Amino acid sequence: MKKIFAHCDFSVKPVTIIAMIVALLSIPAVMFLPERFGWENGILENTQMVVLFFGIWIAVTAKSNKKFFYFSALVLVILILREVNCGRTIFFPVPGEINEYYRWKDLKYGWLAHPLYGLYMAYVAVYFIIKKAYLDLIAFVKMVKLPVWNILLMLIGMTLGMYAEKVLENCVFEECAELLFYVSLVGIIWIYTRKRVYVKKNPIQNN
Image (cartoon, rainbow, N blue to C red; front, side, top):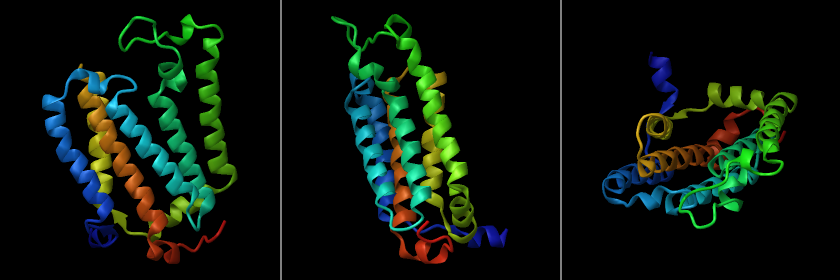
């Protein structure tokens, strides 16, 4: 148990403070924001897109362990595609309707969307294996202290987001939870890419 605690980093970093602020602001947001704020392409979802694209920039500009962080960027692209339903909620709104979009089965060649999305996810998995990015992941887990608060906030956001999606009919709640998840996740990527101590401790350099 002592070894586990010794491997944890309980310090509050700037990116952790940002995630905490998002968590706190989510409470009044869920209570008072109109439902339209949680619609597709609404303010909350657009904010999520900004966070995820920022995360991609962080990952691709990493100074070391580039293959692993390129993999991280590819995973963030998966999350972006999920948020916009592979572009369906951007390019195919139903005319005259509010927050309504054609389904892929209603569109010509729309049936290709999910297989292509699946192929992309398969490519990301194959990249992870072929480029041996898992070696970097193992090194990070073994040698780098885990940013506890960011991981905890990320898990809270993920859990609440899944609960809101499956049980609640509150799109603002769901989008706020997802925003917390994304902010916490990107914060973790920032920590691992920008802290010199992490780079020095990781024996897998410049791969």
